[in-house]
Image (cartoon, rainbow, N blue to C red; front, side):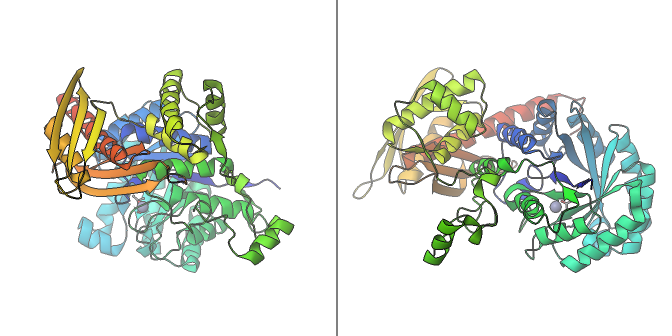
Length: 519
Ligand code: KIV
Ligand code: ZN
């Protein structure tokens, strides 16, 4: 029996980035897109081109790099948004514009202040205009979950006629129960038939995003929109890894369907996104949580030793997880062993990136006795996603604390000059961040600060994530720092955020002088 392929539409870089605290810099987005392509997603929603110049740049760079997945940009149903989306994805090998407008009575009346007829007219214009840029146009009925089914049919007829080939029915507020999604999708797929593909996009406000996506598939949806680790607006989106592994594990129920996902890339994808965003999946999160394959009770351990299938429905290897958390390399390991290990972890670096990562590995191996896979993943991700080093930390000395005033002496390299300064603060971190402010002349407001150990041991690497606002007109910027020493990791994270801000500001200036674009 030939199987139906369910298209996996990944929106980690768009809806996922709308998670509070999940904003990413351009280098980080490119690395994620490359990993999503390796994972085998059919469509990468790379961002919302008109949202900011940074989004526009990230989408165009992803469009230049990705070849196997379709690259998509979101656009509201306006000419300005669609033009911007079309320009951002212009160089993609396969491309899609995803345009949307709200179709529920509450959104049309209170948010859009438009009549249903006006909404249809606007949608038809948007889809027709999008077709001037691409062949492949997706139309989303925002808040479809609370929309009138008769209106969903009417607007679908109109946009399909105008050239849309995918009709997405988002449960924008995560309100629907599985049997209700099943009914909506069944009615709509029987109505639309082969004129377009029916897609779903389920939010997780009631914890039903994945269940709703699965019933949508058995009722006719042929595309599901989802994110890695279930990131997304509010309670998040349906988690890609859960949908895909449910389809694979319960082949008895889903025998008619398949996806193009290489499940062995699920764990590496999850780690990459957690390392970049600083948002760890909860420990008991299905498939990718730290405890997802941990068997604590004696009875379970005994059963596992006798036959893994007593308590294990998925084998960790299937998602690319080496459960042994292998001790990988030590300070005597050479460059070839390092390169080989990285390629086993799924990193294929340019010579330049490999050299930089190897140098950092050697420094780490001098200080840390045991280096694990997760240490390497964090180290390489940190190296690859670094913003241009406008300011670079040369040295840091912190004087504590208990009796006197906490103070920090810092040397920073800037344009071939080394600048040294010292400052005091209410605590050591405060002293570090204030001294960096004094040196750079930019005063950041620390909005969030998180520290997490990457692997185990007292000498574990500290992964610090900061969120800093340098300018009230620009959203706060995330920075990451990795070091055995938490103070050094914190200083690096703060300088990283400053570098990302300055790179973005430079691009902003450039784009404002480029009158050919109207973003
Ligand atoms: O949740 C939603 O409705 C969306 C649309 C823009 C597809 O994210
Ligand atoms: Zn959404």
